[in-house]
Image (cartoon, rainbow, N blue to C red):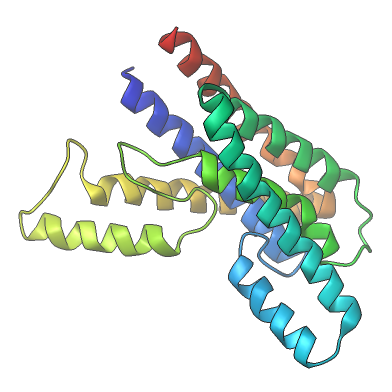
Length: 215
């Protein structure tokens, strides 16, 4: 397997994990833990509506998300080689915390581990074949997939691997993870997040292989 293909495989496996996190957040905690836009808008709403408790809880989510981005930048500067391993370890820690959180905890507080881990995964898992592609949400991936489809139809493909294929496989991986996570939630409820450990193990295995291949 070429280095490019291996890095793409890590991205797709991480997108599968992202789908697991996303569906868990929506079905168990009734909100999307990767959607900082929604959290920022809710902060404004709580501030203007004088809901101090909810404002402070959402501020905590913002601080965790921001901390994840800042830490990611430091990792890129100091330990870029190990970034995929670090993502795997932090995701694993987030899963452990989520597994042991009480079912009746405030839903937004229950998403704190996902806010932090998702921010780091978003920043450190860059994308396949030189394309910038998020492994924790789908909006830009859908946009780029459709742009790629139009260019393919027009015969204006660019790169060794087409934009349509690269982003299409990310969308497929993410939503396959969501399907897998959905049935895990149906079976195990709040403890279902443990199911994400299986695809996460694949991310870790591929990341170790990538480091060895680089040596």
